[in-house]
Length: 141
Image 1 (cartoon, rainbow, N blue to C red):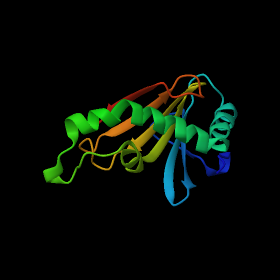
Image 2: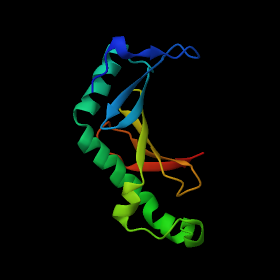
Image 3: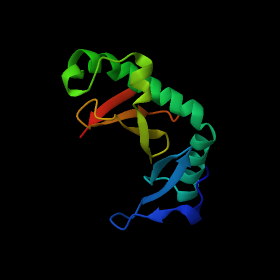
């Protein structure tokens, strides 16, 4: 997994966004580089640094999502009658799939998850403000 200029596609709707797709196992993950006062080469380097340590970063991001949403799911969204049983933390984690990693500015990274319908098909987003740790999250959609 490596981002190169050759693998990037420029977003025609904006002057400063590039994207590509990588494979992690059998999973396709969309990568978006949003240049905001940062050169493309520097953003590619940041993206590749993240991907070189992907397993560790994925664990940190997923840990944040589990911490933020696991109890909420079991208390407010679980619905046995409609196929959404109460889950263990590990079962909850297994339902999460990374769909997109967005890089903004120098150290702002969003890791976006599909939640397998647990929250009505909203996206769960783990957010890093230092490029290393994921200390915040949100639900979108």
